[in-house]
Length: 231
Length: 231
Image (cartoon, rainbow over all chains, first blue to last red):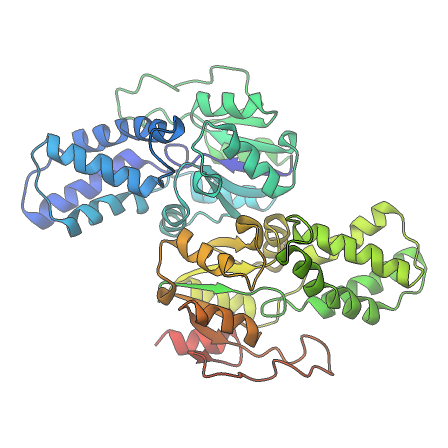
């Protein structure tokens, strides 16, 4: 194995707590009340459907920042929350400032000493650059949907990263907290590593609590994965 | 200015000394004599013409690693040097292990603390990933010809990087040791920074010894540039 590519949202960064925290800060700044947890959860619920519209060809290629903003405007309208354009931009930028799970900075650094590490994410380039700078993720490369104008789980994203690495899929491993993402990678011949993030969706999370297949590696977190890989 | 993108070959890494050193190592390993300096210089002389064939549409899109290898085979034939395929691959890989100019690691790290830093190079992704890992260049992103299937100075490369950064050209600065590269960037509205590398082509270098236009910044090296920018 020559490279590990990582899902980012949920696998490396705790988007839910980060969004809630930033909505709470916004409440204080604006002196208004916001249903922070509900907004975070409902915003994320619009994520897959918004990408599916692109994947099915219903709308032309649209980067995630713009899909996020469309979903946000819809959500704010549903809740009758009136924010000006600059504040909507500020809220949309919450996704650029997500906090990593605690094992991530050290785990990634260790893995980088032994192999190429890169993202394989639906986030666009500028979003991922900001997340990496904020969360101190030392990427060798950012591979993302935008480069291929396809969203995961379209095969173009996985195979596109392998092509740009000039590696056959068997020499590239996807690390993700989502079984479906790993299934898509395995179907193309890539190696797979599962790391559970059992509170990604909050305390009531009901899916992706465990590995659903015999993935090549299953580890509790990135540090544990690095220990398994570096022997 | 929100981001600085950098030319790599010559501006950040001393390809000539690095190639000569590696040819000299190969000589010892194989117990043969090689005209190391001549090979390095002639190989680089084939660089622009090989990309121009792509730029003019004479051959389909071809990544730099493959152009380098074609040029190398041609050059070895001209010199009557017979190497097996594995050794040719090894020599082609010399480009993946280039040494940075001495100011680069520290200068880039300082600049990264204040702005987004990325490559803007004709090297392909996997080549640039290897160079960055070898020379410890802490990129936020690798922008390169391969992502746009165009070689500099085609406008698609410069504008493609700005588009992926979601920044207007005026907010992106190209840093390069080559006046022609900066001219192409300025024509598109980008900011420009010139850093001379007066021995890039060896002691007889006759071009790019000085800034040929009033670039936005002219500095002796990356550390000096970072001092100018960070006040």
